[in-house]
Image 1 (cartoon, rainbow, N blue to C red):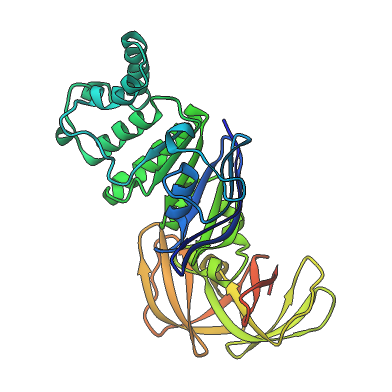
Image 2 (cartoon, rainbow, N blue to C red):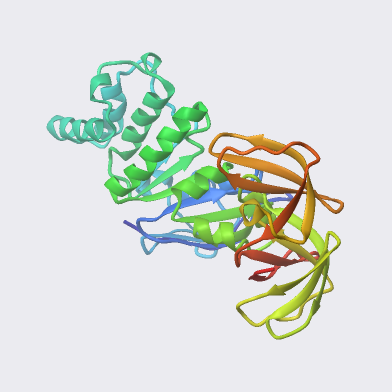
Length: 367
């Protein structure tokens, strides 16, 4: 399976910059998700790698071979890049059976009938759709159609499988089931997957690494848990996680090599980092995940309950702390009357300190 390298890739549509100087290395056999809000450039990036869109500048290599270079005048067509593309609407032929849809590409590649039969049977079994072999797409559910589309894409053994929001047309339950199947499929096929989505939960659960983009710019490229626990800036911190992170604006004053005094929501606390702190600006923003704010019995931090949202397995509690409304997530089925006074504790070493002006991460630590 190949490694994919993007060097200084830019795509402009007139004056609009869709992708701005993107540098990215996609390791072999990885499951990479291109994530971000609508219009951030993730689908354009995917299409440029596949050869469906021509970059304005830069260079793209697949398996050590240059498939695009603006300087050298190279632009290898999509059918010569040995990649498979799974579209959002599946694009199945309505007048062909499941077998015919999967076999179609192999027939165009002049495979012999016996080899086609063996390959289609292998894929029907892998994707658990053997019983639908003679059915037409209109006779299948959304999830079954998606499996057929995946089988057709995998049929010619492409080096890389590209997927552009393939689960967006499915209902919530089926989306969850198909995430499991896609993750298993990645292991079974031993392939490189590049996946586009705007759903951060999909990115978290499926990927080996996430490439988060905004307005054509790469914001962070990291493993899902690293991105969740150590977001590189305020945009990443806000985008990753549900419920979203608490952002508490305040002021800071450095008091030691690894400590600073932070004032926020009427509280004054010592922020301690495991690493030496650099320059700390006066205006800072504390980022605290909801699960790191607990309701404790013995604490001098007081808040009032604004609302509670029990969901069975966990309860999301909105709290009024000073002039801010903050979010806490408590495991278990609990509830609190509105306006009840409670005591809070900030626990763990995953508190984050950001520069309010630039949005950059300054340090992680504890309060």
